[in-house]
Image 1 (tube, rainbow, N blue to C red):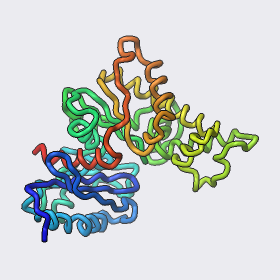
Image 2: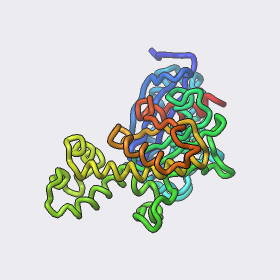
Image 3: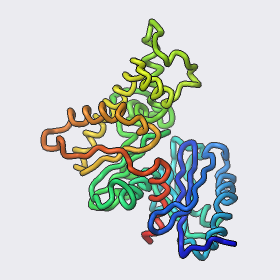
Image 4: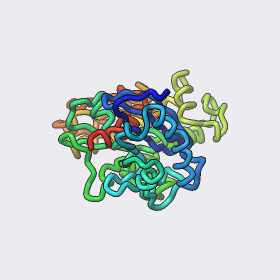
Length: 322
């Protein structure tokens, strides 16, 4: 017998490796969540078909389409105005993908889309640590580096829907190559999960005595999680990797603070799980690089929501607000 409730929304968070989704009530309770691969289906139509197979039985379970107010989607390079994903460097689908239209066509349910980090920012603003805060920035540290900028209680979209790509700002002149975009020295090439791995490999190349625990792992086995585990076990190079990563992130955050003067910056995503290993050098570098009028005014915090929930809740909020 269907477990009918008054109304619910569907929130979908498309990441570089995994797509997570949930059934969400108007008060932000996630009744059910699940995930599928973002990389397994090179054909976008097969990806949507897989989403349909997973989600539509849930819609039926909770009372059917008549109870569903809509589907909200957060995705890299998602354009709120057009409902398209456009040239996302961290996704396997290239070019312009009319995702909202394709999902709405398949499900027969109103579908809205926005940038994944914008969705996370909305989730934090409505349900999380930034509740009732009108000026803040979210930074998502995962496969890539996303950002959502909230000014006067509104997400900053710009004239074309793509404002706020802070992860692709250049933080090191002629620096590290970003394999997805071809840019040199972008923030994402240093403080994403892959950026941490790249830094570890660079530091290991100079470890002539081979004393680091990281040397016990092959290039394929080395991940940001491995670097974290070695760091908490006292490995000197692994700790230096996080110090370096935090220094670059802190410098970038100082730039962002002097641009919009937020009350709070919220960090979340897989890399944020490093906790103080990342927070301490980031906070120090941010404050060091701020003008005096900005120092000690901005709260730098980790998200209070479970990693997947902020983006799912924020995506669902797209349709609750309509």
